[in-house]
Image (cartoon, rainbow, N blue to C red; front, side, top):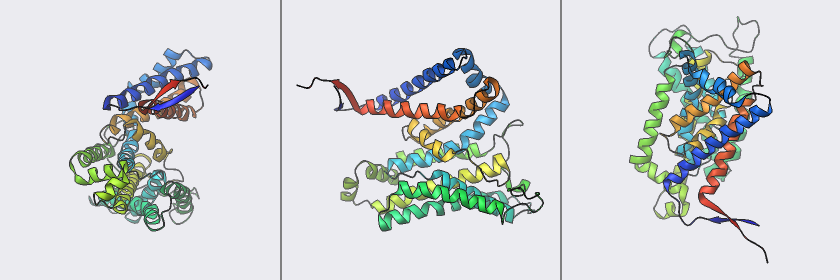
Length: 353
């Protein structure tokens, strides 16, 4: 029989070996899937992974898709370190995009430099307010933040749908459920002439740097880590668990809301019923791929963003359904969980008497 035995100790490099192993296993399994579908695996992987990055347009699209993943991934890595499981980042992203977009529409026609900062702050505050709901319920009634934040995601999606079908709908849009296009003053500048890459990527890099500084240099980062590793030890040290919950969720909500408003002002340019292909949920994979290290979220976000490009390339060049993106991401998460378990446990074979 098979038994899992806890390891006496682990080293930091074991975590990164597990990540590399998960990536290799994902690539091998993807090759087997493509082979089963009748494609040459080496040529197909080159066409859907390498070729999209061979042009400025492809790099720009990679940056555009990685921006929300990195921004939210940093927030989730900080929260998960503290043992606060914010699974509703997708809803906070949607509300951030909605509130920021509403500010952009309210200031439509105003051509001043301060319009864009106000729009971005409006999105961050919207996401923060949405995350305050599970924070309050957790602190006041000990409600499970996983369930509350997750269920609020569907409320946020319905709220966005109501607003673009009603008050925020473009009066000259022939009754289509979408807002008018944002004014140029409320849109993010592009980084490249081709593609959708914008300066939101610079913000994401700044957030990753600030998150790393918070973890390494700020006492609050240490307090959140201790609270996540051992709530009883944190209590004996005088750290407030309720404060940790509030800070973790508000940071997560603010950055997720910022990611949402960046998405609508940088990539879409208006409010539509669907502003995110589940970036908030995919960022969970990014955070764990980075082993909850804010700086490592940057390459992890770029790698997972590549899975979106690969899925689109597979659909266009190979005729494979677009769901292949979710297959790639699901394989990666599956192998990450499996290799992570082997970091902390070893497999023992024993005979029952």
